[in-house]
Length: 146
DNA sequence: GCCAACGTTGGC
DNA sequence: GCCAACGTTGGC
Image (tube, rainbow, N blue to C red):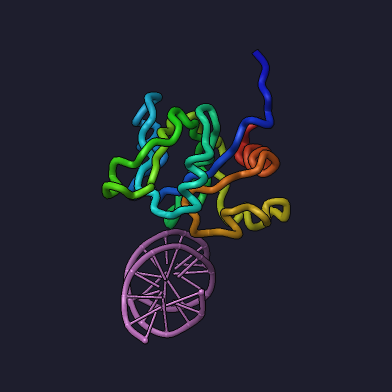
C-alpha cells in the first residue's frame, strides 16, 4: 500500500484545557471521542472536510497556549447530538495519536516568519482550523518530531 | 439589506 | 481583568 500524500489533510483543534485537555484525550483511549460543541460555520465546514486518518494538532487555548499533541480523525462528520433539532452542526470523532515531545507555543509560532499565514495567527478565534502540509512539517520539527 | 448593539473568544 | 476581533441578532 502506498500513501498518496495529497489526499492527507491537516487540521488544528483548539480546546481550553480546563474544559477538555490533551491528557483527557489521551486518557479517553484509542476508541476516539466526539469533538462536539462547534458553533461556527467556518469551523463546521472544516469538520465536514475531514477524512478518517487525517491528522490534527491539539492546541490548548487560554492556558498553555501551545500545541501539545497530534490527534487522528477516527470517524467522519455526523450530526452533533448536542445541537438543537434542525440545526446544521456536525462533529467528528478523534483520538490522541501522540504527544509533541516539545510543545510548540503560540509565541514560537508567531516568531517563525514561515508560519505568519497560519490560521492560528490570522484567525485566532477559529476553533477548528486547516493547517497546510508545509506548516505541519515545520511545527512537527519545532515540536521535536523527526 | 444595512448597521448598531450585544455576546463570546482568547491573547495579553 | 481588559479589550480587540469577530459573529449574530434585530430594528429600521
